[in-house]
Length: 426
Image 1 (cartoon, rainbow, N blue to C red):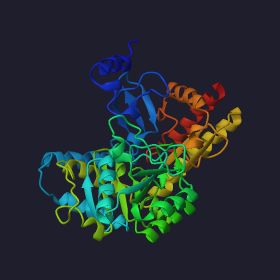
Image 2: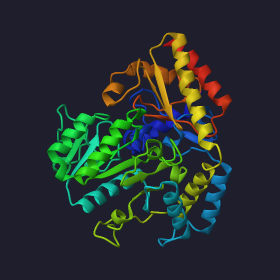
Image 3: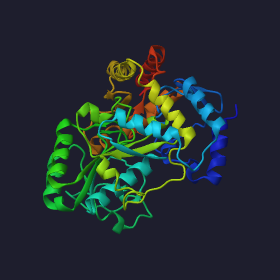
Image 4: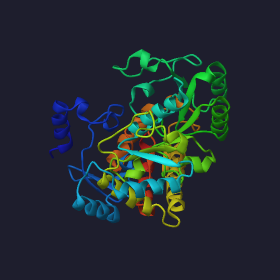
C-alpha cells in the first residue's frame, strides 16, 4: 500500500525546511515520518491514508472542546459570511476583550494579537517600557515563543547571562536575559540581590508545558511575586498554554497569584490564530496609541478567529466543564501509571486540568534537568508503539499532552488498552 504520508513528506522537504512549518511537528526526536492529517472530529484525527488516531496534542492545546465542534464551526461560518477581515475595529473584538477581563480578574485591559509569541514579546517590551529597566528573568525549560530576547537557554553557572540558543540572534540581544532554574527560590533571591534595580520583569509559565508538564511550586511563585513587588519589577505569567486549559481563570486562579501582566493564546482562539496580553490598566495604557510603547498587527482581532475563540469560551463555561475535563485527564494519567506498574516499567504521570505529562522516571520532575534525566529512549519506543495502535502523543519527551471534552470514557479506555500492550513490549 502506498504511504501518502511518506510521499507528502518527501514533497514537503523540497519546499519547506525539514518538511514542516513548525519544528514541533517534526519526528526528529522520535524518528520516522510525520503524519499528515486530512481532517479531525471530536477526539480523533485522520491522516491522508485514512487512518484514525486518538489525539492527545489537540492542536497543541486549543481544541479543548474537541475538533470541529458544531457550535465553533457554525460561529466561524457565520463570521466568514460577513467578511474575512476589515482592518478596522469590530464589535467582536470588544466582546472578547470584555470576556477575557471578566474571566481573568488580574487583567483590567487587554490587547488582542495573533500568536503566543507576539503576546509574550509584546508583554516583555511593555514591561521594559513601563519600568525603564533592561534586564529580564526567565527560567530554563520555559518556552515563551521565538522572539530574540527569549530564545535563551541556561548556562552552567548561577545567574549566567546566556548566549542565544538560536543562530541569528546576536549575543548583545540576550545580554540582559538572566536564566534561572525552574522552582529554585534560592537562585531567584540571588538574582534580585545582585540586579534588583535593573530587572524589568520576571516571565514564567506557572504550569510549564514545553519541558513536558512541570508544575511550579506555590513557594516558588509566592517568592517570585514578593521579590517583584519589593524591587519594583513586573511579574508576567505566560499562560498561552495554561490559560483556560488548567482552569477557567488559568493557573493564576489555582495558585492565588495576581500577576502584573498575563499572556494568553491557544484556547482563546479555539484553533484559529488569536492570542492576547493584558494586565493592570496603568501598565497597559503605556501602549500606543496612548503611550510610547509601540505594538501593532494587521490581523489582530481578526473577526473569524475571534468568532472561533468566543464560541470556545462560551462552551467551556458550561456547568461542570472543568470538573469533567480534569477527571478524564486524571483518569488517563492514573491509568497510564497503573499499566506501567503492571508491566514493571519505571514510569510516572501527572495532570492538571486538561494537561498531562508522562515521564519514564521514578518521580515527577521539578525542572528541565529532571526531564532530561528520564529515559528518553524508552519514550521513543513507547511513542511508536502507541502510534501503531492509533494513539497520537506528542512526538517529543519534552512536550505536555492535552485532553479535550470529547475524550470520553470509551476513548480513555481504548488509550489505556493500547498503553498496556505498549508497556508490555518495551
